[in-house]
Structures are given as C-alpha cells and as structure tokens.
Length: 193
Length: 258
Image (cartoon, rainbow over all chains, first blue to last red; front, side):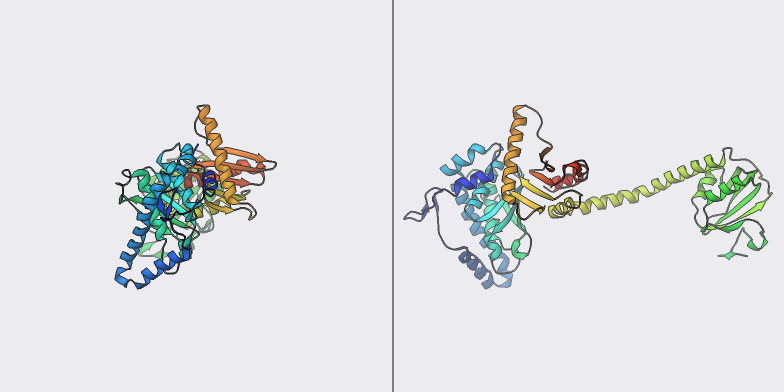
C-alpha cells in the first residue's frame, strides 16, 4: 500500500475551506487568502520588470524564497492537520516518500499546481513534475514557476531535513522545464544545498 | 608496364598471355577456387595496390601447395592475401612451386584463412566499437522520458504507453485515444498494482515484475521502472510476445531515467 493520490484529492476537495475572522484556514492553521492567481502572476511579473538587469537573479531568488517560506509553514500545517492525519497517514507505508506523495496530492487538490512525484532518492534528491500550474500563464521570459520551486524545496525539507522548524535552507530547487517556455510540463529537481 | 611510385610492378601485363586481371573484378578466394577447379599447375602472382609486397600462390594439378606474401609464408600468407580487395593478378602456367607450405585442400585452407581474417578484423574493430557503444550509451543517457515513450509507439502493436507514479500520478503518456481519461486510468492502475503488491506481500513472494490484464483481444502490460510503473496498452494480445521482447530495453532505459 502506498498513498493513493486520487483518494487524497477526492477526500480533500470535500473539506470546507473557510477562513475565520482572523484570516486563518482552521484546518491547516495557516493564513488564507482568496485572491485570484492572476494577482500573484501580476505581482511576480511587476517585481521582475522593475528589477534592473543586474538584480533580476536576486529578485527571482526573493520570489522563490517568498513561496518557500510560505510553503514550509503551510506544508507543516498540512501534514500535521487532522485531515492529513486521517486521510493520508493511514496509506503511508514508505515513510517520507509517501508523505511527499500525499503532500503533492494536497497541493493538487487545493489547485495550486497539478503536480506529483516522479522520483525520490531518500534524503538526497526529488524530481517533481507539474502538468498544470498557474505560473505557466504568467508573462515574462524564461522559467518562472517561482511558487512551485519554493514549495517543492520546502516539502522536501519537511520530509527529510531537521524537524520543523529547524530544517530550513537544507534543500534547493531548480526548475528544468516549464510550460511557460513551451515545454509539455514543468519539471523541478530538488537537491541538497 | 605498370609503374608506380618508383616501384616496378611485379606483373608485366604486356608479357602475360594467360589469366590476368584486376581484383576489383573478382576476389582472391574465387580466383583460387577457379584454379583449383581447373586443375592448373603454375604460379598466381598478386600485387596489392599500395605499399604491401606482392603475393604468390603455387598450384600443382589444382592443389594449392605454397603461398607467400612478403615475409609471410603458407597459411599466414593466405590469410594476408584474403584481406586484399584491390590490386592485380596474373597466372603463369606451368611454373613449379619452389617449396610446399600448405597441405590442406583449397576449400578448407580458404575457410580457415577467412575465419582467421574475420577474427583479426573483429579484434581491430573492438576499441572503435567500444567507443561507439560508449557514445551510444551517452547518447541514450541524454534521452528524456518523452523520447523513450515515443519509441514505445514504434513497437508494432503498441497503442499507447503511460508512465504512472506509484500513487497514480500520470507522469507522462504517449499515444492512445483522446476518449480515455488518462488520470482515471493512472489512478485505477495504481490501485490495481497496490492490490497486486499487497497480495505478493501476503504470500511473502518477491515484488511484482510483470502484470498482464487481458480484455478480449486487448491487453495491458505493466512493469515497474524505478519509482514508477510503465503501462503499455496493446489492442491485440497475440502480439504480446514480440511486444514484451521489444519494450524490455525501453523499460530498462526508463528505469535509468526514473
């Protein structure tokens, strides 16, 4: 038995997602917003556009880091939530590898990116493929799935680095393919720093 | 008189009345077999184009009795000459052999000479072939899963090929029908493989290696590759044998990639 992605997605789309008066998603204990994806694409596009040529790489790192910070804490909220514990954990038989499969199933269920695990080398390397993600529709040039990059590295840390919150900055993610540049899918390779 | 690079030709065409010609028109084995069948006695003089020295073979009533090629004598000389494919030849009737260095029938001597020649050529080609195989492997390693999946569709009888994660995530697919919901297929396959693996676990046998599901004439074949499962859909189960044989190296290649 391993984590069955379709069962995770079907279970989680039935969970009521409603922020409380503090802007919290009670289930995952994280801040929630209901802004359209085009808003986030526009934010990234404008930040990249205003950065001078010699600072664009730094700006890109900053955008990835925003997603990474968010992904690390939200990811922890997800894997420690009652929903994850009741839906995903009973199917976990391969340890961290299965937790990652479950985490990307959740990532898909919430509509952040239709993505999944292609390869995991325990504690060393992970390859993620995303067949649909909102950053694929963003404007700009080059590979620019900043959110998927940051979140993928964060999930790997939650699975294999020091326990939360001490495992940050252990892994990094490189995007090797992207729908935004005409590839059939996005591909993300996460390795140790 | 043929004159070349300061070296005088051993064959004076103008003075030869009998059998003569060019090796571009015939091969040395054919020539020797002809002289054998004709029961000739005499000397066949061969001149290879290039720097090599000429060769001589001597016949006595159709039997090959002696051969020289530069310093080589007997079978060694015959091996050398069988490798020549350019040059000229002339047969001098009734020239007697100065000695006897070959004692086997012409056919047998030729077969042995060609066998030795082939072996030497294989040996010489080995480093080049190893380099070629290495570069082929390197070329293979640069192939993507998309390239390999496309090759699945070149196997006769394969309708589609899908790479599915153990969790049912459809990593990639090629071919197939647009009416099939590939994500549902991936989920169903992952659930089926899970069941099969649980059965293997209960029975305490090895992990599954092959899974074939037949639906009337159609068949679905599943094989593990790394963390994923390769699924091949074939509409005609009678071709399963050849499909299994042909896709094996492709599955192995995907295992390296995944």
